Image: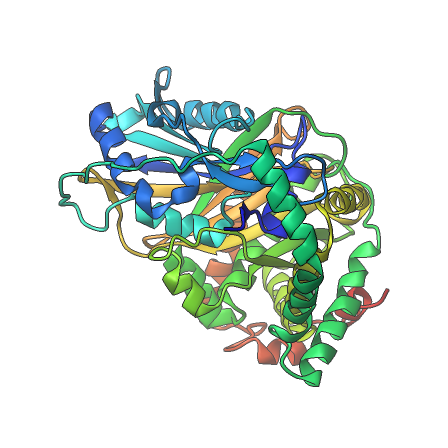
Amino acid sequence: MPADRLSPLDASFLSLEDDVSHMHIGSVAIFEGPAPPHDDIVAMIAGKLRHVPRYRQLVRRLPGTVLRPVWVDDPHFNIDYHVRRTALPGPGGEAELRRLVGRLMSQPLDRAKPLWELWFIEGLEDGNWAMVAKTHHSLVDGVSGAELLATMLDAERTYSKPEPDEWQAEPTPSPLELLADAAAGVLRSPLEQVRAARAAMLVPLHTIAGAQQVAKGLLNMAGVLRPTPRSSLNGPIGPHRRWAWASVSVDEIKTVRHALGGTFNDVVLAGITNGFRRLLESRDEPVDRVVRTMVPVSVRSRDESGRAVGDSVFNNKVSAMFADLPVDVRGPVSRLQMISAQMEGLKESREALAGQALTSMAGFAPSMLLSLGLRVATNISQRNLNTITTNVPGPQLPLYVRGRQMLKAFPYVPLWGSIRITVAIFSYNGQVNFGVTGDYDTASDIDVLCRGIERGIHELLDTSRSREHPLALRGSTAPAKKRAPRRAAPRRAKTRRT
């Protein structure tokens, strides 16, 4: 039986990792107290690991760098290594929790173990407790990570006795067996390359029109090669992290969207734009510029999303679009209009579709070439990409651990290359929560960004609640193209030129 090999995208996250860029994603969840006994938590998690077999597997590299690594069962798996308990110093407030999360996320995951950790944190004020999850990006993307969270927790306050864990590790392949599989892979490679080409050009490109859409997307993606003005948002980073959060409600976002138009994501990006504007102003840097962001986009179909939990399909299926956040625009409504028009144009340009095709074509590349290509891309980002903003819809119903309700959940995304600040958004049970990661030495002021995000949403909300909306988009994003300020169209056109 062929080895369970990492996909090209999953392997890329291992290749990107180095001494300062730790490629784990995560979440920080706050629960009502008191915390359950530690043994009960360990038993609960052990009883659910059958849904996530990757959590008991190791990454094994093949001799040389010709083929991608493989997943193998960990013969020495010990859940007590991965499920850990700690406590906050007094007074156990937000500052103490954020500082601890920054320290936990600054430590890379041990490649000799399954690539995940769960930290249970006691000592929060009001008697609450928290759970910090770390999972390497080679295991999950944001969407499947949200599904994983729902799998590990309970949908009801009542809970049943954990099922006994009767898992047994499969025999570990010997180096000789791995070499034999690698040789077989080389013999199979012509057929695999044909299949990869078909996947890239025929799935989801079933027609000539589809190929034209991808070509259009590739042309638009070339716009990211244009450098942005230099700023403190980019530069060398260290291995240590700061982390902070912001929070608004789903109803507030919906109120803005219904009154002023645009999509849910447009409103979120408008708030983030205001946050970066406030951050640059606080640093006495010019704001007559754009902040270019990569927006990861899930290319997982609805059927795949629905099957993910039941079939244990927790892998990466993401592509990307690149957007220019108009921090040079002072008015909140004008800012939203420009973002709406730009995002609609990016969707029409099929940028994400082109990215998916390129990801499929990565199946051609040996891991050595793939790693080299990613390093080149990382160097390019020093001038051309300022941040990452990823929005993951989470469960809109309360979740529980041993009868304790999860009150809030915040995401964590890593830094890489020369990007010093990243922003992740996770919606849960009526909340829209932002997790902001910053380099410890060069982004000590990310709280300014967080407060700016909240203020940007509230400014739009104040306008939405007024009796007259002379600048409102009123409805869908379609009118945004016609009613956006004159400068919006040239900006979008400029983004699409090479």
